[in-house]
Picture 1 (tube, rainbow, N blue to C red):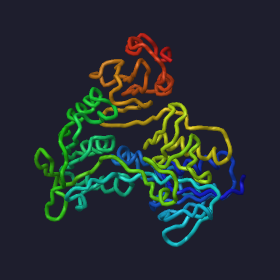
Picture 2: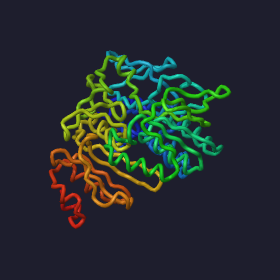
Picture 3: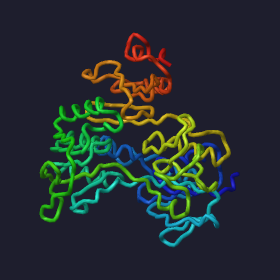
Picture 4: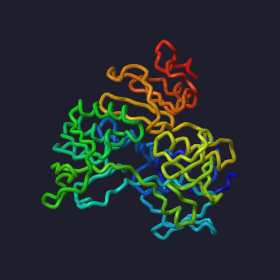
Length: 403
């Protein structure tokens, strides 16, 4: 077992936790990890929050320092691009002409920011946020001040909008849907997030479609919308992410909204696994495929892939989890609700401290705690259970008694 050659493509959270898991489980064989960015592996979730706001520096968001990889005998190669996979020879070919042989290959290639194909999208001053260098560029923008226009009212768009506003910028957010996040949380809770941003000085324009980027002296000067032009000093496009599946696709692996895997993260080729943002994996708890671009999933799937390689037990059997910080709101969410599931609020929205449960046919499909802490594990146990609505909202019934 220790003689297997393990190669991990991707040096983000998921890839790093594959490597960490292998060494933690006692694997002593050769491990190579390849990263496209020149940076040591870091926690990408901090880019739109703590790092962007200056509350964490580069060292603080790194998963390990450089010495860790040396001490754990990991061949870490940064700034390299994987070009193709020769599955028959079990060789990964790199863009610089080098080749790396493997016995088991783990794809953790992550995702790219989704691009909008409209006029001006390629102008200087049009920004996205997926990598450390992009967060650095936004920090420089914050320091200069002015007006930021954000296209998109999803998690990244709202987090960057909040960070920019807290840094003193004027911020306008435009999105075509009726409420922020309503495709995930539904209209009622989406309206709560809308109110949060408006109360904190964001010019939030929902039901507005972006049609292009204004040009001013050769750079981005705002957004063209179906409700008129919005002048700004820079434009952030935050309309989701696209999994990086080209390497897998060109290798002939099964791909459909990500790389298809079984419940142990194994792809259609038994020698190749996929984890993190690219993995469209079978979740045994929910009985369906899920592809989630979240911190918790990256950590857990990375560790699971390591166990799979080593022949240890484990399956993808957990509820999705994510968190966000926006202004004075701290939130954790666990579950997998649909937007039209019924939201049940425990507490008062206006208090800023509450829990939301979503139900379908009496079954709790998800739960979200807002500014109420140390309850996430309890909520995880409630999700999937049939609970009367009256008990969910009754704060005289302890959360632990709802499981």
